[in-house]
Image (tube, each protein chain N blue to C red):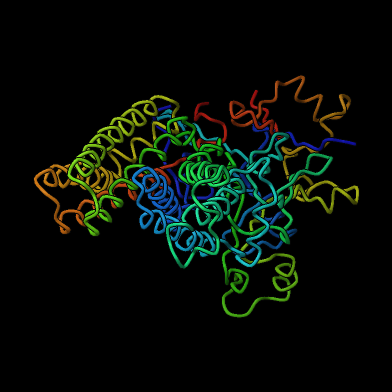
Length: 204
Length: 301
């Protein structure tokens, strides 16, 4: 069984947010909900200012705190490491939302699935996509589990114009992501939290 | 490292505030601590009326606040599924145990509950008493463990948090039981003096724990430092100094000292109100000023 993970090459990311849009199109998330996004990070003082783009998504942690705090078992990890929320079991207590150190979960409040991007009635696309969500539950990035099960890569990976996102099997030492992590010293976000994220950043 | 901004924007790196758990969760936490504290102190003072009210506060008030907060309240029973890993689940089990054993413990004291009574002489009653006290204790402290189990918010990762819950709970229990005793006029002069002294002692103890907690968090890491900045110097400082320090400690202490001169229902009511306002504010603010670290933990290049 593979253990899926991702490497994000920060030297390659140009901050175009194509991944954000591809994710939106794939999952049809309601307004204000982004399973992936790109953070802008500005440091320094004028005239020496540095801007960096940091793509962000659920890190599908091996030791996921969201799973531990979930009182119903709705938040769970598959054998391949993908962390999912079973919305038929979720009670909307938001313990997972609070426990995620990366703040990568969203709560769908009552009435949120009636609001589309264009005001008034939902578009046929929104109607179709929203039908898989339940109000009053927590939703999150699924690593495009449906696509992965069908042998495809996540939408954000496929669409990235700079090939900054690389998806693969962390347990396979020959996979591209394992090689990149080894060669370029991939770092996990907030590694001191001991959550063992399956997403690594390449900064050097 | 000192220039990390506090951001609301989805697309900008920086500290992010915890926004999901706010006043409704703070109310549920407050009611649990009040109820558990009332019951435990009532056990100690042999004041069944206070114990019954404590039980009602948890059974009705705390449960209702939790149900109102849930996104899917009709599935609330699912919360019982994972006591082996989730403190929320453990908390709900402790609430159920508290209600069951609490009722059995109080049954001999109320004629309308006598059908539940197992008598007061046997070993069974002693066991029920211990179980009721343990369950009440868990209801009082589990909120602290719920917050503690979220590694995301550094401010909450302190062993002092459950202790803070315990002592605030006991203080609330003493204040409200003092009110009930004043209302019914059942206590002896010596007994009353002891409770008043206990009240003052717990106010001082709570103040020491709050100060220790804040001091221990100032330099724990950048996120907890930011939380403390928000609490002491930021937008929540007025609520902290006004609600927690002025009303919660200074006013409660003043009312307690005035009570030394003699019992007055007005003073007792003021004491309970001031104590509970301070109690609500400290935990509400601890929820509100929780911040998340930036995902790379630093903003450097």
